[in-house]
Image (cartoon, rainbow, N blue to C red; front, side, top):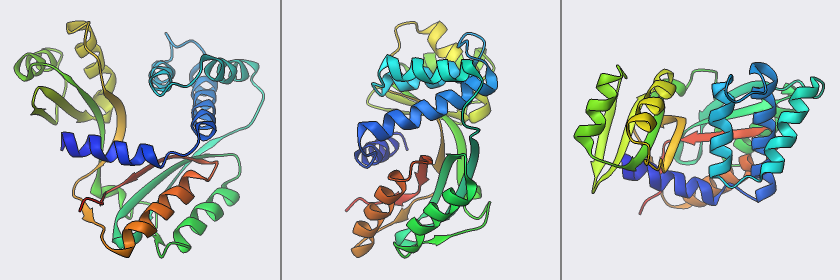
Length: 239
């Protein structure tokens, strides 16, 4: 799954949209995490993870600092998480995570994306059971040494894949911090090409023909929604 995961990440990055959308997404999420868990990254590990991820995606420091300063003030919007599930073009399965200060507006915008691309918005839980909520790390390393390190740290590893020296480590999302700590402390020079918590599909759905163009329209429409933070899907667009 390792290489296919990276390919899927690359295809999603192409539809990520303008930098302003990316900055807005991180700014909103950093603000919410800092407001709810504290503005000190050393005491708020979720904030630390998010800042590291933002820097990796080349989000400017002033965007991060502005969001944290806003959280320090205590005032501002009251964003709530919202998750929508359904079936996209070609009957692929889709999970859409949002942060919203107006749930009526958000559901209306997300539903519009589904409706205009021959897709179907489902009930909560309609497709989530077909995804694994996982921590994913991808880096160059020695499989045996990495496995031994994670076992010694009592990390519940789901799988380790080795493709030409590029390892992909999968673990339950609850093991993220334990796994990352074990890896970075045992291998201080490790460069994590992928370092995130995500929803991985248990199986992929082949999307072909006219559905490919419709799927790309669907993803672009969702990315254009200000409240949409993350999109997970099981579409296989390969020829």
